[in-house]
Image (cartoon, helix red, strand yellow):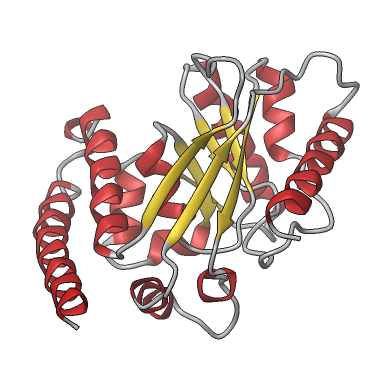
Length: 249
């Protein structure tokens, strides 16, 4: 009982810290873009770390890679939950691709926009093309990217296919793919599905009996040797199916 009370008091303190930090970032987001450069991106990563802590998540990075991480990469991962939208930037210095709707989220959307996230309307060909060009521009400028190749939250099991955007960018720029496999031990509690909202999921995370979130990093994969983006995507999709058997089945 005392341990439970202490935990909730700690989370309350974390939320107070997060609230102050959120208001500060939100206020800074109204400055001209010339005044919200790389420092704002770095502050947004710190904000993600505060949020993960406030949600009571035990975020664990497992380095399964045998080789050092490359200087630049395109991070991909499965996407069973909403937590990875914040946990991945907390762990990795990346610029994520997100759905257009995130930009409309109060506070979070504006902070993400000013942190130089890229947004796409998935059912709009023009938006997808513009997002692809922006991703290539970012990659050529030396930035790390983060893309969910399942094309959204598809459930706790790997979706039947991967979208090819990340692999297209990799082939066009030569930047390797960095695969990260996500495993939430209390899968049902973390999984995003209708009609849950983001606030629903925040409450689910905070009240989970098992709050372990395992992020497994594997060796980066060079685009060299793949005939096209489809073959590259299919190869990496097969790797994720193997990791699924190891961690989820």
